[in-house]
Image (tube, rainbow, N blue to C red):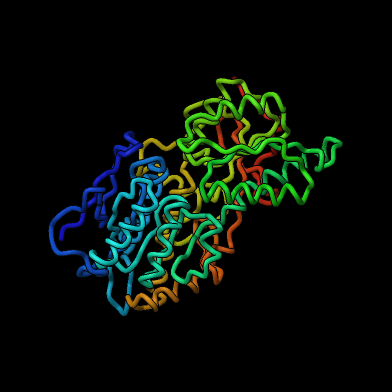
Length: 425
């Protein structure tokens, strides 16, 4: 069977540079022909499998995810690959496109495991698709290291074969709530006087983010003055933003993946919405700076990772080194999305687990994954019994003069918070 890489341009047509390496590219209709269905190992190549969102509403971040996987595969292979019992192996990924549809994710994972013989899974993009994937890998007792499913619903079911390198969703906007309380106190107000407006996509991830925000607000006694849901197609929140203009909250929090972030930023500009503090997920993936320029200034954007953090490893070097390599490898990125970085980190977990297990046996490899305790360019990774990463914090960046700068938590901050937000509409 011939392994190759076929560049994906589902939503990033400006990615003209492709990576070479042992990556088997798939599409909805099927995979490249050329031999029998893959076993978990083909010769000297260990094959990982992934059903990922290369089309549909999650495709932008799905492509970021695949780019992160591919860069790590290429880097590991160039460093000699994986050594098991004295033998060297390359890594490869067999991809299918789940079309951003959870039912399709589950169906394609069944295909990867049952028909293609893949025994090692890299997760899909998004919480809804990862929630669909988890019962499948549990059913077949096939380990999955996932990088993009942050929903708490993944970690309260007793799953033994799902492991997530990212911080869970309730942590995403916790720093924004704490910042709002801090700003209130600095300006002679009580945190309980802070008035908050919220608009969230009605999906597992965003509703978990909302739950975390509500829990943190309750600690401070803050007031919820608006609690709206985005429409399912994420295309119009003008009615919500009109209410925001009238209510004049102190803090506006928004979460709707890339498409929701684009809609929010575009319509806030169109409607000239002025709020002193705006916190929104998926700023980087939505490329709000590139699309909206100075109108995006002041947004607070939670991130799993930033290139300014002092993380490093033996594979990529520092966080800044990874940032540089990614931009050199893929065109069209002024900012590296954290989704790509955590995808690369997931591949590093597989590399180390294979070598610690010194075996290809799925149970031994699964146990090695569970025992992971490693430092990476992305941050520390250590899994709880439930499978979530308990070692790495979230950070909050603010867009300041067209750049993302870390402003919270204070021990990670590279810049002071700019408040109130002064967008140039």
